[in-house]
Image (cartoon, rainbow, N blue to C red):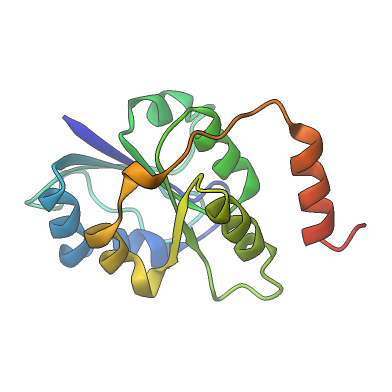
Length: 164
C-alpha cells in the first residue's frame, strides 16, 4: 500500500490540511497509486476524521514523540517548509514535496525550499498549486540529499535569516 505522510510540524497550517484532503487532491493522489494518507496536523484547528474520505485511507493526529516511523513508511512526504521537517524527510531518503505557506511574512522558508529544489532534492509549491503539482510531479527527477554537510546547511540558514 502506497502511503503519503503530511506534516506541519509544530505549526498551524490548516490550509495545507484542507487542500491535501480536498477531493481534487485525493483524486490526484489516487491516480498515482497512493492509498493511504497520514496527516500530522500540529496545532491546527482542522483535524479530519479517520477514513472521512471515501477514496483513500485517512488517518490524522496532532503530535507524537517521533514521526520517524511515519516518515519511514511513507512513499511520499508532503511537508510545510520548516527546516526541521524538510531535513528529517530528506535524511530519511523520502521523495519530498514542500508546501510553502505564502501567507507568512518574511518567508525564509521559501528560500530554503527554492535552494533545495535547485539542488534537485525536493519539489515545492503553495496550497494554490498543490493539486496541480500532485497531478504533474515527476519524483524521478529528485536526487538523494547527502547529509553530513551541516556546515553548508548552517551557512545557508545564516544567510537566509540574515545572520551573516
